[in-house]
Length: 163
Image (cartoon, rainbow, N blue to C red; front, top):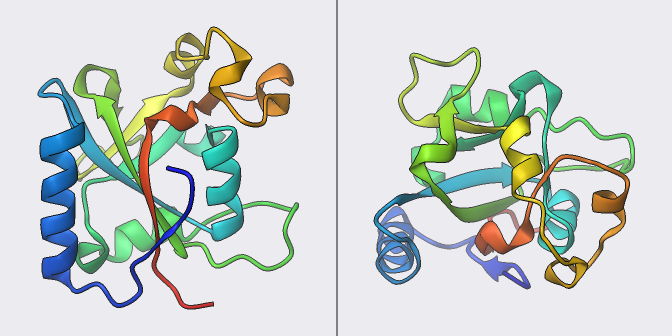
């Protein structure tokens, strides 16, 4: 993913057909299509450097819910974007669509009874570090030792809110 695709007016059917096509073209049988909701600022950083792990999840949280399927629990998880770097954030502004191997995922800590919520643990992220810095646009967070999911896992990014 290099830029946000405009999806503000997408219907649930448009998202369903789009995600079905992405899954058929870009997701191997051993992997799963996942969604990560975030702000546009954090999405830009993710597409350049990767998605940062959060201590409260012991990694990174994902949902299986499309935008029209999100519920209160999804909003609680992805609406809680804590950053001091940006003064104005809209937490669910952008949807990042990812593909990750099923074997690397665990139920989201604290939400084990919710079968649509997953995480990739921080200890796994260390093993996913790119071997060469040319695989990321901004290498500084990697050099600083921040736990990140590489940006190469992001298949698409969709703008959900008209700002």
